[in-house]
Image (cartoon, rainbow over all chains, first blue to last red; front, top):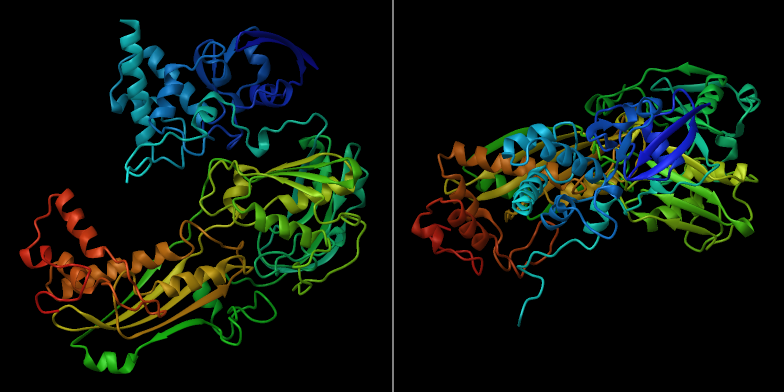
Length: 158
Length: 458
């Protein structure tokens, strides 16, 4: 067993893991943070996506010891407590979430995109979210949501 | 009247929970100490189990329970209860569950599976459902490959006088349409979590799209006495300690939050085995299918062959339609007979045809059971009837809009199953559709109405 120190959504944790334990298993099974899902568990669907030091990663393919000392963000910690992040609000208002299973990963992929490119085109959004699969929406409303959020967030910053 | 919801955008009641991660799916209930379930599936498509030895698997440290067909109180379930929870003797599709293991973790469960000795005498399978209909085809099931709807090997609708209809026709147009099989590929795989509770009760967290059906099925499998769980099962019933002592009302079935289903979760995939292991081991058990298992072995839309023969007048009216539709069912009935019925009942599409004869066949093959997917057979039916509509229009050199205006149902028309329609708006819908999509319709179509059949030449 190995000691793992990490910060998730602003909270520090010290836990023991096996060499083969993935970041997804740490989040779900050890910390009971369940928004990252095991949709395929092989890096295809993106519903396990989280931010590691602001970089989008697929937690099912990430060895937990590789995030030693790093800061992890899931959708549970995207907004300040009691608040809703503009991306979350936009996904809600533009029907970007249907069954909700891909939504946490989708929102974090959108966050990673907007961090780099605050004013994306629809084509930019397609490329930015290309690692995440959704079976319900046909993607149109997800793209609408990200564009709506980007407009709102740019306005807020201005 | 002020409309509060119609015409308004209404926010989803569960939308905020979805975007903040508060929504809990079946897999998101984390109970420390939960055992991991893994299942030994048949490596062959058809055969007879000659030898099954689970003793070495049971002695792997960390293995809590190993179950086979002997542990299933009533080993038949489904709409027609023909599907075994675990194979008794005959394997009918590659991937069919034979042994289930609950262990402290995934590695231990897999190690146990590897220690199971399984000998299957392989038999020749049949995969194509048209081939399976041939008299000399390998038998998927002892009673034959064509599903019996009562005493008939097909479901049939007869309406009007089909021979008179074809005599009246100027042109005969016949085509065969094939719809491939499709997997639902919902993002959430099959998951079940079963937790033994105080007093011998059981809580099951399910991904089911049909929890009320599945709860009743689960009681049937566990052989719990209940008024309307009948005893006529295709596979054997046997006594077992597992499940005994449960009474109706003892299972708390928790579901309703589904991570995509599309009809793929209308069949019980994981709750039965997980529940049996939880009852036998006395510990919480979770079975999450791998993506590979889900794609290969969960239900899917079976493929279809649909042959439509239409008798058509020169003015575009269809006066006779004969349909033969053949649906692949996989190895078990599941919802397929119902799917075929739906397909047959919709064989005219939205068109009034005075003389109809349609027959639907449901054919077994050595593939995983097919089942519902988005419309219970209506989608392939619509695909075939609408492509046929365009082909007829093309053959008659008629505008496809005009062809549809002439043939769609009007108020007072009878469907081929004898329902009298009284609130039809198909003409008005097509007029609106044309307007919204910038299609200019000739005046004679603009003047038509669903109120009565009439207008130019019809």
